[in-house]
Length: 462
Image (spheres, one colour):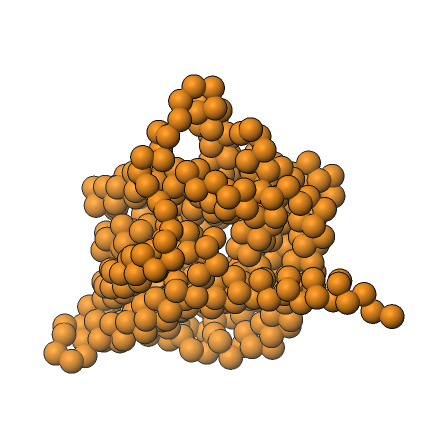
C-alpha cells in the first residue's frame, strides 16, 4: 500500500523545485545564447576575432564570478531569513550585498577602460589577438553595471519564488542581443559593419534594456506584494547581536569571494595555457565555450533551487528534510547531465561545422567537446553540491577549501605539465586538468554525508 503522505510530499517538492529551477534554467540558457549568438556570427570573421572574444571573456569571467559570489551570499542569507521570517535581516542582506557588488563593478570597469591591452597581453603574445580582445573588452565592460543590477534583483525575486520575471526579461534581452548582433556585426539597416566591436556593443545594449525592464517589473511587484526592503535595516540594532551579524556575514561572504576569485583565476591560467599553445588551440577552445555554458546552464536551475529551497528549510530548522531534499536534487542532476553528455557526443560534429574556420580548428574543437562530455556529469554534481547544497547552510568555508584544493593543487599543475612538459594536444590537456573535478567531487561528497554544513543562520543569531 502506498504512503499517500510521502507521495504528496514528493509531488509538492517537485513542484517547488520546478517553480524555481525551470525559470532559472531557461534564463541561464538564454543568457548563454548571448555567447552563442556572438560566436556564431563573429565566427564568420575568422580565428582572430573568435580568439579575441574568447580571451576577453576569460577576464570578464573574473568580474562575473566575484559578483556571482556576492549574489550567492545574498541568496543564502535572504533564503534563510525568509525561512526564519525575519524581514529586517532580509533588507539588510539585500542592501549590503548590493553595495559590495556595485563597488566591485566600478573597479572592473575602471580596469577595462584604463589598461585593456596590458590585461589581454597576459593571455597571449599574438599582437592582433591582443588588439581585438582589448577593444572588445573595453566596449563590453559597459554592460557590467546593468548586469550587476540585474543579478541582484533576480536573486531577490528567485528567493521570493518569482523566478519567472527574470526569465521574461532574459527572453527579451536575448532577442534584442541577437537582433543587434546581426545588425551591428554585419552592418545591416544602414549601420556600419563593426565586426567583433558590434558584438560587444550589442551585448551592452541588450543588458541596458533588460536592466530597465527588470527594474520596472520589480517595482511593480514590490508594490503589489507589499515586500519590505528598507535601508534603515542596515543599522537596525546595536551591541553584541549587531557585531555577531557582521561576523556571520564575513564568515559567509569572504570564503565565497576567495573561492570564486581563485577558481576564476585558475580558469584564467587555463586560458593562458591554451593561448600559449597557439591561436588555433585558443580559437578551438573558444568555440566550445557556448556549448559548455548551455549544458551547465541547462542544469544550473537545480543548483539555484538547491540553495534557495534547502536554505529556507534549514532556516526553519528542518534539518533531516533538508538532507533528503538535497539527495533528490543530486539524483536529478546526475540523470540530466548524463543525458546531455550523450546528446553532446552525437551532435558535436554538426556544431563545429557552423563556424568559418579551418579544418584544424574544427577537429580540435570536436575533440574538446568529446573530452568535455566525459567530465560534464561530475562538473554538474560539483555545481549542485558546492554551488547549492553545502553553501545553503552558510558554511561557505567548506566550499572554499574544496575548490582551492581542486584547482590549485591538482588542476593548474596538471594543466601546466600536460601542455609544457608532456606537450600534449589541446583536448588531452583539457581532459587531464579537468580531472580536478573528480577530486572536488570526492571531498564534497564526504562533507555532504557528514552533515556539518547544515545550520540555521536565524538560530545562531538568537
